[in-house]
Image 1 (cartoon, rainbow, N blue to C red):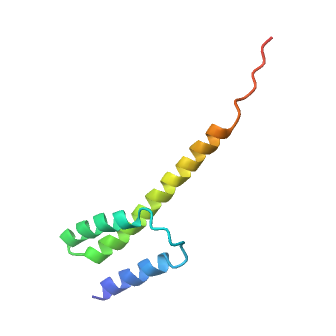
Image 2 (cartoon, rainbow, N blue to C red):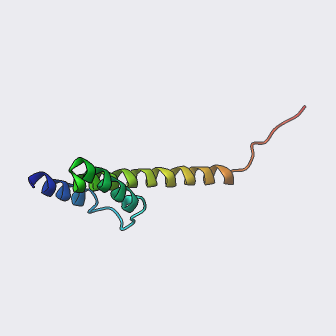
Length: 81
């Protein structure tokens, strides 16, 4: 029970300063909660799944922004002699 409470407090502290954007967290928490439930640690799995889901969503958004920035750059000038 103490581990469960510690996991809840830790997950709440991790996301206390984060904006209220749940991209990835809900799906990750669902998958992690299910996997954790099978292993006997449902809440801990949900907290870990939420963290991994947020990480993957942030990485995807960062990659998408970089691809868009590269697309908006003009082509390099070529010189011919």
